[in-house]
Length: 389
Ligand code: LLP
Image (tube, rainbow, N blue to C red; front, side, top):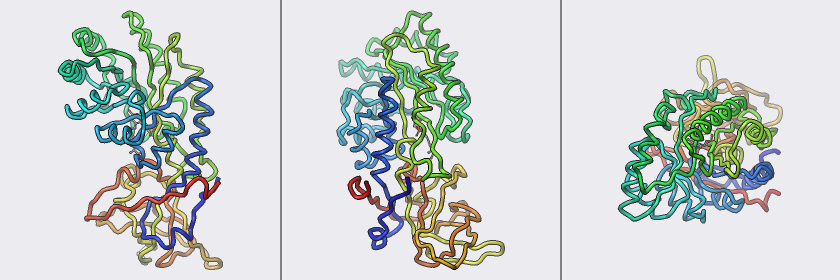
């Protein structure tokens, strides 16, 4: 599936801009649903990946729930029509105000990350005469084999409750009369391409479930988090992640208790490939060893290469026939040397004014934009499903 860029439409617009192909999103969601439904799996979309209302409306239409990590994300999910009972609220540092907002909205569940947080939620729920449903986020100590900044399931990471704290956590729960334990939650990291890591997660979850069973506890649901990676190198050939292979791993290796529901929280796999950052070449400059293509988009619009050394495919949307190719360091205008989207990128000769697409920016791009250098927020432009299908 090639990117369907409505170039004519883009040409007249101010750049940089985030371009979202809702047709790709629609196909991704269709495929996700096709593969999750037969197993009865329930997917919450992780708003942190992209919280644009247009994206959220489509995600909701497919019946997904919402996974939020801030009070504002909970508000956004509600505004975009997600039912409160489909919203989970995670995060290591929920403020009192955020907890109150979620309690008042009667969300499905808090994913709790520490004993102290359980006590705070209990207290705030008691003040409101409510019962708060929670899942314990347990740190499974499973290596996700991904970038160290997006690994979350190791004991050294700040996330979740460590297994050696579970005894004490049960004591805390016994004393918390306004808390109802309904689930166990796990998340080992993001951009995971080695599916073996999820097999490791299943094995660990089975052991942890056994421990709870030994303490006469069977929770209603197990939430296995997100993390399925996408192909940043081949966005057209692999526009849709292999949801089948992903869910099959859990089907094969996870041992749920009878009637236990299985939840996921996918972000990147759903939205990454539907987005491209569109930018214009401002200047082409000869360096000592290389040419620089200086764009009007920078790390303020897409921080992933600077932060995680991540690869994004870069394409010229203004290819010139017969002028050959050159290698460019594709950089932005921001006053930082790390403001670089790719080194020695082979592109058809580029000139001032050419349009460039940086692919696979539907996830963790616009949401991570910053105002550094007093930059203006880049707008989002959407290709509707009908335009492209
Ligand atoms: N659930 C929890 C508890 C999470 O922490 C995350 C992501 C997700 C679900 C969704 O994970 P996904 O399916 O999108 O991998 N900014 C980084 C990614 C940070 C991911 C944070 N947590 C990046 O640009 O690669």
